[in-house]
Length: 256
Image 1 (cartoon, rainbow, N blue to C red):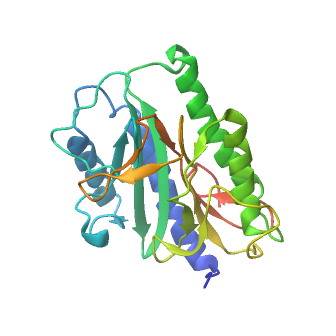
Image 2 (image 1 turned 135 degrees about the vertical axis):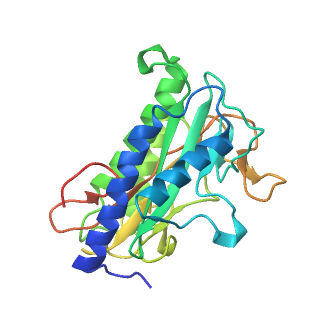
């Protein structure tokens, strides 16, 4: 069942999302070569604790960390480790879900380590651009009266134009009191299909795609998802609340 959020729920989700948006701003200075992914996770845990947020990832299915940190050909759910040292040029995707007074926000962003945006290779620049554009396209049609798979189709069409592999095995989702709520929101689909979108719904939209084949697998650690052909993988995510005026992107700096 898709839950509809009332004013109180939206305000709490908004607060959680704004804290995450600020955290990811600060992470720009923290994700540097020489740091371990475990140290990154510890920094994130300290931020969450200091902001009086609650991690919704730590403890989920036995998961031991507050973030998922995925590197290069790792798509999602990468385990932080003391042995994984970030290097210049690495493509790092960080995913964090935290709650404020019982309501969640979920956010993921990519980072290219120690390389200025104007110095990125054209292929890496295009990969990041496609992630942002596909996410923005999905959000643009997250409107009352539209169908859920309008979002899915909008994301997919952008990624197809770039020639990327759209991952089938992992999808976006509803969000609210729980990190994962109904409905599932695929990054592929037929426009005009799926439930009607109404004001008060909330979705974590997260394009997941690769430079090559869409095929992925779960590594032997039981968590880390990797591309089958070792191509680079990309993951962006924002939490969006449906309103009558426009989608409220609570994991970007905005006013309620």
